[in-house]
Image (cartoon, rainbow, N blue to C red; front, side):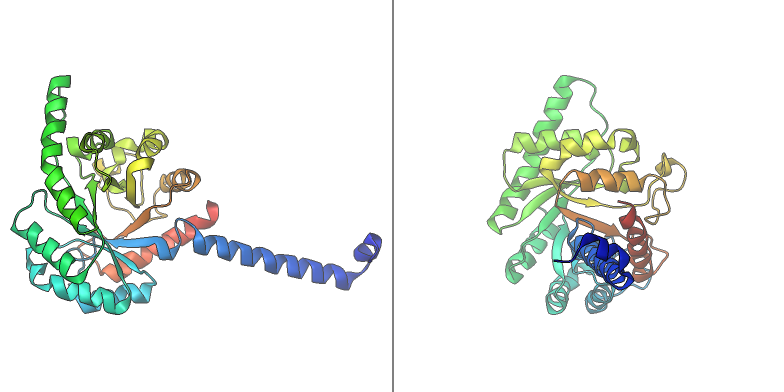
Amino acid sequence: MINRRHWVRSPILVFLFVSLTGLWNREVVAQVAASGIFARTNLVAWCIVPFDAKKRGPEERAQMLKRLGLRRMAYDWRAEHIPTFDAEVEACQRHGIELTAWWFPGVLDQDARTILGVIEKHKVKTQLWVSGGGEPTKTPEEQAQRIASEVARIRPIAEAAARLGCSVGLYNHGGWFGEPENQIEIIRSLGLKNVGLIYNLHHGHSHLARFPELFRLMKPYLYAINLNGMVVDGDKSGKKIMYLGEGDQELSLLKTIRESGWNGAVGIIDHRPETDSEETLGRNLRGLDSLRPQL
């Protein structure tokens, strides 16, 4: 057995101990970073189809995500993308990109049935992100009527999704429907296991002061949260969309998310039609990397 005083007096042993301990610590840090909620493997690219200045097609988009080390995508689309739905799925499958979510119409119209057909054809298991709106309700009776109306709207979508092994995420996009408390009330009233909610920080500036409390409320229902650089009242001062790391609020928001133990999908957004999606995603990834050690 080596005497403890011999360790202290031996420069070689001290050097080896410090070196090996440092190496082990670096490995532990790397493993934690690789497996955490904000790991690259858990990030979902969002708002990269109609917002891409380069107007990439399905194959180019999948290659871009692969270059960035992203393996998940939420698919937003416009009418001009409908003819390439099959090509989008096939490109993702070729390059190992998971279609984590698909932007979905608010009712089961022809576009919705086209999407469901493509999902069924390619055996895709995904989340259908559904939005809504509306002015704030003024009375308990009006609130009850609004909840009942939204339940009636969402139920057919959720039942169609369930038949394909998919789920429905209620997406906050402002208005009455964008308030998480209202979404949770809809989910509870539906009583279906395949309905949850999607939370976007860039649509949540008014929630900043009470975000920890709100996150605890959302957590049991939350499928995904989409990140954004955040400043107070950014939506009112031309700073609604910011790169991660350039705001002064997102670090505390990320800490709340990480410390909660929640383990859903984390969106990394583009949402800048004037720039190349690869550049925007890259800047957000670098911003997230700069924040991660501070967590």
